[in-house]
Image (cartoon, rainbow, N blue to C red; front, side, top):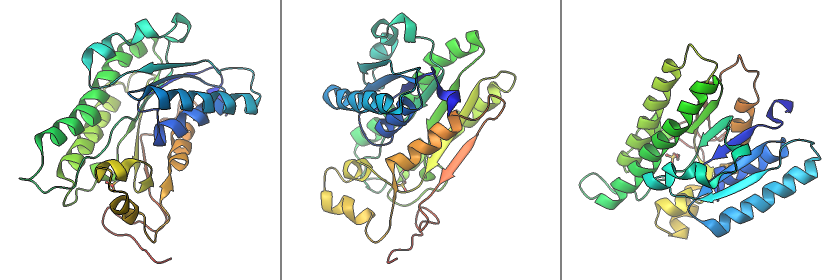
Length: 264
Ligand code: 8X3
């Protein structure tokens, strides 16, 4: 959409999955990108794919891409972000807080402290620190759009997901509070709440156990990273007076966190 032309989009967790697909789709729409992730090699590959998408789209604007190796849980790295971004790209229009994940399916009492820490540090604290960094600038420019990746897990808790669900419920509450705070400004706030999406998500949740991860998607056609990227880009491309507050998106054969139809 032409509303994406020349916009600058900052995406966290951009090295794979939803973040990577979102980068490519914004590039195709003529946006500039600031891509953040811990995995520098993979981030470069995403940047190349985004350049290629931009070239193929033959749009006249956008196509400037900067990659920054950064861990959103590291406050000093977040504070040093602007020193790594060329001045011309520092006026961000859209922040996509995508970095996050689930670690383990352990029951309360058996959850490892490091998994609790990782999930809250990334899914909640990292998202809050990037939002704080950008919102000051958005307020001073009276512009901007924050798009946070929530989850069905933030709406509907389930056994084995306590910490992950709590972290996504925190994203939901934080995002909804922010929406209320900026009601008197043109700043837009969106929460995307995907159900089952096939990415590295389950592989990470099951600690690299591929057969356990594959089982999650057995007999059902899950959403893809590209499906969610379309929702994100769609929300960003609405006219400035339209704020998509929430997008709850499921595969057609998923009705809730625990109700799926498999065998279609
Ligand atoms: C991931 C979706 O259903 O595994 O955010 O919690 S689910």
